[in-house]
Length: 482
Image (cartoon, rainbow, N blue to C red; front, side, top):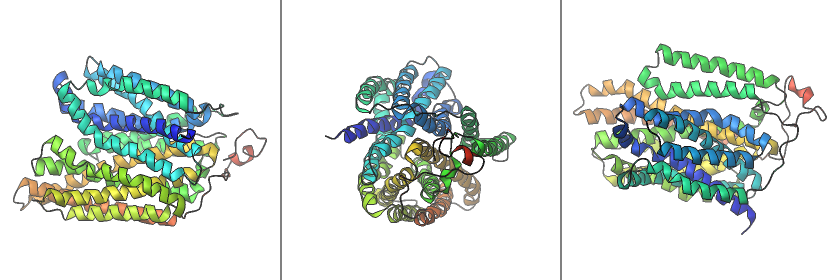
């Protein structure tokens, strides 16, 4: 077996573990709540804290890999993730558990940001899409197996076992990664923009927190508005700082690359649409139709399973035919799936739901690998870490946006549907259908952004900096091109 496929195997294992741990915890929340005797609002932070920290660190960690080498950051992240998993399983109280989940998220951010970057650097353009598609299978397996494995471990042992099981697997994975990943020289004359990292991290934290709790706190509440204002102020300061920095955390000139900028925009709307469905369907299944949480989780597995089956083929096809048509077709299928969900009858049969979810999974699978390959292949080699971190960041932002938007639509439309509805379940279904209409409109934007990005590759080109940094970036000025 060629070394590059061994490298893909260790990256895929990291993707599987980080994704699995993001989905495995949800099913164990009732057991954690009962064990620690805490309310629902408190136990939710076991999940929310993890997502907030991951979303805040992806961009800085991507750049850190360019400075310290991908291998060092990946191994350090894997080690922290595994150690924090053990501490989560041994937590004596909810406060400790949430704190260790924060540490676990720091490690997961390194795995999520470095994994695609390692793949993009290892495989050339003729195989990159196929490799990213195979890595996408690990992500899909993590999403689909998480609830089932979490439920089984919680029932057979305890909720602590969902964390402790990461110890032996993580140790083996770290040793495998240390042996397989190639040694790298630390980037010469590279420096990490600490000020930019701090501003971007806090700004993204404010945005993601506002999107996560806006529905509960109220979108016009003082706390929510303060978070959004803080995001705008810090975001503006970050852009101004980065445009003048010699070695910025995020080179703004990358956004001049059409494949990069429109690919990121497509990711946001694709994951906003996907998570609208995966967030709302459990409510429809459990509160509307009376399914148990385990049954609802199993009924949602067609989405990740379909993604896992399609992603490798779409990635390989994008290597040959380019990403634009495949990604746009995938987005179109997602729009059709969301529109079909608006017509899902209240007394639907299981088959009525399954084919709609399969269609969504196929659409996401067609979109994901070609789009990731296009984004990572469009930037200079020295910026692939930044591109990988930014790509992962846009996925998390899209997820948060989809959940926030869908929750806001349902909260607004539910009182309207309650008037004249035969049952509360019918009213809930009507409000959720309205959210699917909105999600379909959002995903339709992705069809356009995927088409107009073009299909040219610029991975071997250097990005010319703009503004005050242009002079410093010339050869001999102490800054790498791009």
